[in-house]
Every structure is written in structure tokens, then in C-alpha cells.
Amino acid sequence: MYWDLFKMFIRVGLVSFGGGYAVIPIIQHEVTEKGWLTSAEFQQTVALAGMAPGSIATNAATLIGYKTAGYIGATVSTAGMILPSLVVIVLLSALFYRMHDNSWVKSSLYGLRPVTTGLIIYAAIHFGYPSEDAGISWVWIATLLISGFCLFLLFKYKLHPLLILIVAGAAGIILF
Image (cartoon, rainbow, N blue to C red):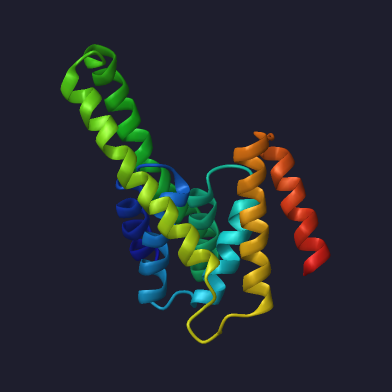
């Protein structure tokens, strides 16, 4: 079990461009396919991981590892998640320092932006949509309204994201 957790999270860690939210769909696919968590359990894990400080992907890896294999599973999962990033960032920073003005490097980095954006949008839609067995409910509609209102406040009034989080949290407490 430990080796399976490590292998899965090292693979996820190798493709984690765009931050933690971009790899949530990959983690969900792997975890639910292996039967380690149900979709509902995964959504709860992501919600808890998002509330904790740090990267949501690393927090989710730790929680999934703990749930499936205890403290050692949490340690192995976390190590698998952060090891690729650590190695890659050390190697790339040395290389990037020497080649940061190269047009191919600049083009490659710009090319990753749409992929990262798409993965984050997919994660938001997939995470916010009710599970397969649940239909559209008032909770789902209220969640969409809160999300839309927060986006409106961000774009129209350019409010600080921390204030938006407080507003969304208050709306959640009132509505749910």
C-alpha cells in the first residue's frame, strides 16, 4: 500500500503544473479508480485540504495517505507529492537562471498557461457539481450563486481575495 501511494503521488507531483488545484482532477481519478476514497469522501478531503495552510495538493496527499494507510501513509504520500517538485525546481532554477532570455523558454512557459487554466476550470466545475447520484438541489444552486457573487465582487470591485473568502464563508454559514 505504501509503495502504491508513493508511486501515485510521485506521478501526480511530476505533472503538477499550475499548482494544487490543477491536479485535483488527476488525484480524484487515481484515488476513486483505485477505490481508496469515494467521490463524496474525496470532496470532503479536498474541502479540508483547502482550509489548511499550504498547497491543497500536498494537503490532500497527506489526508489521503493518512486515511488509506495511517501516519506512514501520510508521510509517504506527502514525500511522493513534494519530491518531484523539489528536484525539478532545483534543476530548473539553475537552468532557467542561465537561459531566462531564450525565446523558446519564454514560449514554452506561455504555452503552459492555457493548459493550467483549463485544468483549474475543470477542477472547479467537477468539484462544484453534485455527485452522479444527486440531482440539482437548492444547495448546488446556492453554491453557484455564492460563486458568481464572489466572482462579481472580485472583477467589478477588485476586492481583496481574503475579504471575498470571508464573504463566501459568511454566506455559507447563513445558507447552509
